[in-house]
Amino acid sequence: MTIDQRIKYLIALTCEGNQRAFAQKLGAKPQTISNLINRGGSPGFKLIQQIVRQYPQLNPYWLILGEGDLGEDFQTEYRNKSGYTLSIQEPQAAYGNSVEQTNLLTQRITSLEREVELLEQIIKEKELLIEHLSGKK
Image (cartoon, rainbow, N blue to C red; front, side, top):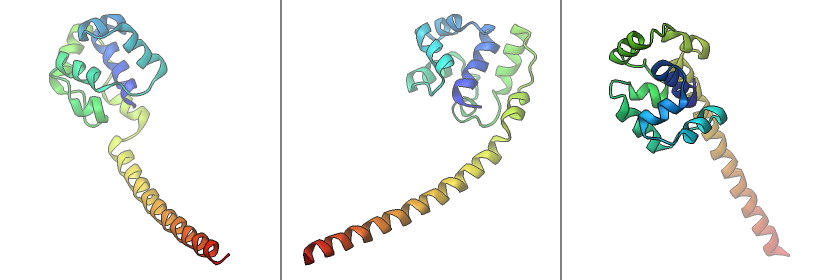
């Protein structure tokens, strides 16, 4: 689940899907929330701060990184208020095990970093060769 999807989930849980009401609770512009939800992408730091301040019982690791759960107190409070019964585990099932995905992505990033280092070395060698050949002419 991406951060914009987690925020959409929060809106459903805390404001019955009403983006304008969510924006008002945060003191954010409704257009900011609308753009994030409709266009996707990542929220700015200010918006993340506003969410964490408005919902102090929310697990910020879940919000920012998608790790862990919403926070036990948060789940209890908002499920009781809204009657919203979707299991917190269901989104994880839809998007896979985030720890497992993180480990796989970390391995892939490490592999790509090594590949970039090798390519940079090849480029330097080619540049030296070009420099050497240009000097001979």
